[in-house]
Length: 167
Image 1: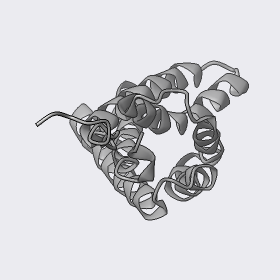
Image 2 (image 1 turned 30 degrees about the horizontal axis):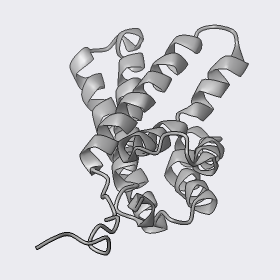
Image 3 (image 1 turned 30 degrees about the vertical axis):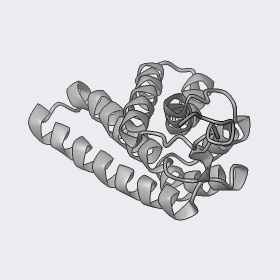
């Protein structure tokens, strides 16, 4: 049997949620580390900018896993606007703004990923607090970075599986 041109149609490529979770977690952790190191400085504009960029980590992780890095700037803007209020923003505003700027994602999956990410992040935060001891200067930065990376990884993983995955 010979292949014809009708058989060579482009098949939609599914994005691996594990790779999106790893990329989203790593990018969010890098931004959270920058926030942690900028916080003791008396430069609120710099750490405020780093805090806003935490919402971009899952979006960039998804785009990197999908092979579409930088192709959709509207979603990146939605990630920035969704991170205006630190914890409540990631829980309520981030999924809404990402969905408003890119309707190809499922709003329910974005909310579910954000809720699961916040739960996992809080669990990791308290686990690090339990293991590290009573001196908050020694563990808060590490716990914050790990909690933010758990949120970023979970939300990037739940961004997969929608209409945006088809190339």
